[in-house]
Image 1 (spheres, helix red, strand yellow):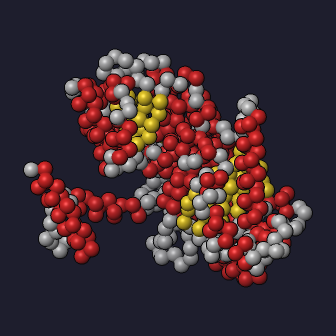
Image 2 (cartoon, rainbow, N blue to C red):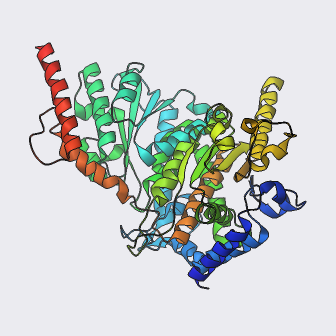
Image 3 (cartoon, one colour):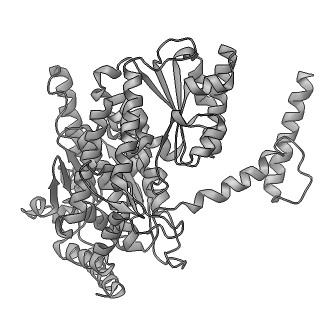
Length: 545
């Protein structure tokens, strides 16, 4: 089946179906049963997407025309589908059960991964049992994860989401996350901590990330000033490295026995499943961490083995491709109706925009159609008082994802259960109004500025409950959706060359910040700001003298 021909058929279909309004589509009695799909504890409701049965059939043909089934197998088998870096993308191997088998380049990956997990479990148990002690001999009671990007966003998001699942033995360990290169986070945090009882986990795949190493150096300096001890002793007592580059971590000063490792076939934004998830395991225990892995693995198996017509990641991806490439919708709001998922929008921003925010295809050609939309989001109830005005009455079309658990507070007070019912009511109401507009209620006497157009497509993801397993499934759902879209758009979702040039330019600027720009090395705007900085810094130095 020819992709170009199917794409043209979808364009023709869009010309006739784009005028359909959701208020008409939602009159069809069996629409919910046709456009909602369940996998374990997760329901995917696409009934408010601007899809017809005919559209979905054509989109499924598009998936077939892109050889999606073969690409999925290549992903799971470990083919080098990250061709620009000559690597596999085997984050799914991190979630395989111990009894599974997978060989890659002559190595038994399951054995390697299980050994890494056992090493991590040993460290977690040491911390939980008070056996890891700082320079004063007191047990560690605070863990600070120092990372950025995937080494920060994923673990932080999961820790916050699963705070209620904190392991009883972990209650004496407080967890913090530091990522900002400007020092504001770490300087504010260190004032609150006891250096004798604080452990820093430096999480960096390459162990060369400037942001992370700057924060780690500040932490080490703080410990030296507080203790008067040597770097070698403090690195042994107060630092753990989580990295794919053991020699660099050791050169920095962290001994091998204080290191956890993962492989270069684990991308940063897919790394929370690896030993990068140490903070998660400390927070919710290894049993909780393994439940997270298991939930993701079950979604992996669903994605790999389920027919596309009932395959949740495939269907979610196709609905969004319809919105982006045919309906012309290029903005996407992530709206969790659960405060525990406050960091999910930021996590998905990286997952989606760093993976598919590209304009060159796998063959190096410029792409002539849209790819990844702009993603943003916020906790839904808070966003209702912020940017929902634009969603309901703005001039931009926006697709939305509503994410909410069906059950919460089952064993707690009636007041909290009432709050959850209020949250559910608001979630469903907003999805309804976005879809139906004025038709949601009688608006016959509304003034023009009180009118609601509706027809904004949305997806509702309903979790039975928010648990380690359901969160694992939710994250894997989005990971695989991103992969499906990359196949359809013919791009590599596993590299991120767009972040490299800025780093190089920053390095060239670093040594001359505060000095006059007397060369022609930079553009006129940059030189102008450099000279302004020189003036500011010169004035400060004169005042200090």
